[in-house]
Length: 357
Image (cartoon, rainbow, N blue to C red; front, side, top):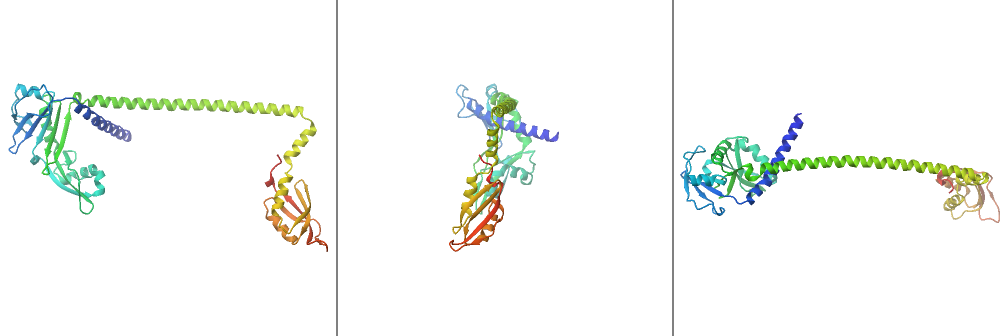
């Protein structure tokens, strides 16, 4: 059960990440009112409309906001309260609220920064990975095939309290960021209501789409197996019918044919091909040897001829894949008018020749 629970958790996290990636661009594509809340060096927060705020939101003058311990110390004016409601608040905090630590790693670690920094966050900061929000600057190359970056982190509770302060006023989203000493803008929190980004709808659509895909895949596999079984059964039935037709044709041929014709067919099928035997023999005999008589009876071959070295022919025939048990069936003789010895050799044929066709 624990394995199934782990798989379900991993699947849910994967769906959430995909839904978040898809929903945020969809939300950014919609016209939305953006409000900037910037903390100055004295710890005072100033609220103003963002320069690219959609038309029709009026021209509200900047105002100071009392944020103490992540909560509004005093209520907003009705105009600003109406502006915050349904808008996106971009809260920029001072770098002093964050812990910055330099970090150097081998260049090959660039692909695994998330896991490496998460494993070392409790060493670099006062918090562990579960209680901290952290980001890092863009890695830059340094000497020795290494990369350097700055890890910026703070407590998760503090960030959540700032986000809750504006979410309770009806803000559709809260983005929390800071500016590092290298003037890099780092975003730590981007929380938006489900109705604004459509996260819930996107997640539901992904789950339904994957479920329908899995269902269609299962149906296609089942239908494919059923069709394959049907074709296999039909193929076997056709094969049986062909075998039955062949048996009927063989019976008809056997009943109509004469005994002499059957004997000739049987002899043709069981007798070795004389052409193949002679062709194999001519390829084996040396140039100084010629045959005057070649007799083929069943699986026996008899050769009579003239050669310079009769014993060597026995070895040649024995080494051939076509003949075996070679030997002389009559004495070897020599006459004055012949250029060599007259030999009489008998050998058995191997099945290598096959049946006649």
